[in-house]
Amino acid sequence: MEVAQITSHHEALKPIAWLIGRWKSLKAEGSYPTIKPFEYCEEILFESLGQPLINYTSRTWHLGTSNPMHLESGFLRIKPGTNDVALMVAHNFGLTTLEEGTVCKNEIKCKSTSMSRMSFAKEPAVVSIERLFALTEDGNLEITVWMETNKVPLTQHLKALYQKCE
Image 1 (cartoon, rainbow, N blue to C red):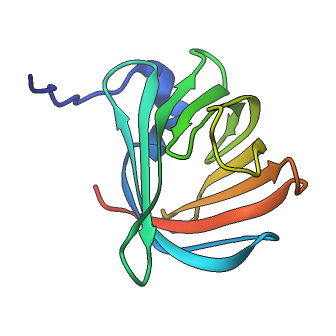
Image 2: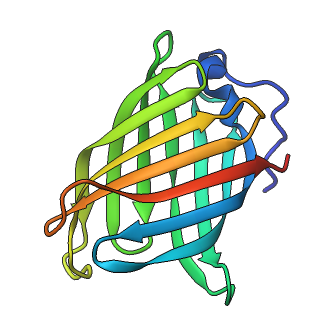
């Protein structure tokens, strides 16, 4: 079954409609106290299907080898008539997160309110995530992610700049 192209977005999406589209990283870097700093490539899709939410998919690969790295998929929902948002994400390493926050102009700030992990997920356990999505003056997207594990306090983990492809 083919999904019909949506020509208009749900009215509730107006505050976050600037995210809709496919984004590819121009520069993406990661670091954490327990690992070596790294660079990666990423493609993100924020897709509207006419509901008061945006489907979200992110896939990353190693800059040098092109080997797949991280994949996450979920939904960015806005509470109609407000600036309250929730990002629900399933990560390929055995974690699901619910992150809640607000949108203000061209910025979305979220922090985890609920985390679940599979019983055999690798240590250390991620216990908190915070994200900032920001539309830059030149129309690019910047995303910063902070992470806390059961061994390291909340620390910036990822920072990337993206260009819209469609």
